[in-house]
Image 1 (cartoon, helix red, strand yellow):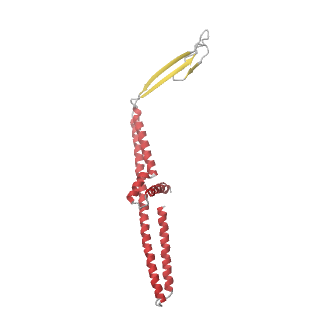
Image 2 (cartoon, rainbow, N blue to C red; image 1 turned 90 degrees about the vertical axis):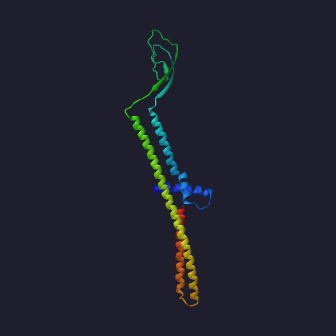
Image 3 (cartoon, rainbow, N blue to C red; image 1 turned 30 degrees about the horizontal axis):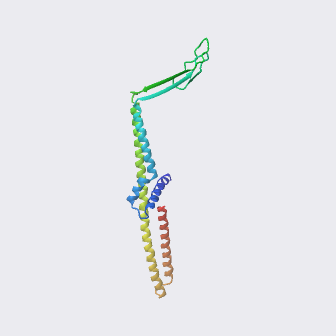
Length: 226
């Protein structure tokens, strides 16, 4: 059921986009091309590949050195009460010294720091992370190929079923025309007394049966089209 919802909706959207441009028969090659380009399921899987590729690039760049810039502004005073210091940075406060008298003069300090961090070797962790990232890209690519194959198979199957039903409808229409000709011939023979009257009822029943078969095939055709 999930398969039918996923790919049935995809084919339906493609068919709607095709009918928007031209109300004319669509070849199987054209339909498959439109499915590959516009099917929402394939667009989603293709986007997932792009995401995994970007993550793999980020993983490969993890071995590069990190450069961090920091700027800190400190304002406070140094008196007998510990902690009168407002620090918003990475350097802790050194205020609160013990004095004989309180010093309420404010002190302003600016501090700039540049820190470099480079993990040159981590015993193969970088290589393992890169392999995992590349494997995830391969998984998404294979998933895309599988989705594309299943969607094409679903499209081809319904397309061939549509052609098959159209052929059956053409055959059944000729059967109806033949039964009508036979009915007219038998009716003439019955009127002339050559054939019994029951033959008229038999031919009428055969004609009704042929028409019912035509209606059933036409309903199947519309269902496949939907």
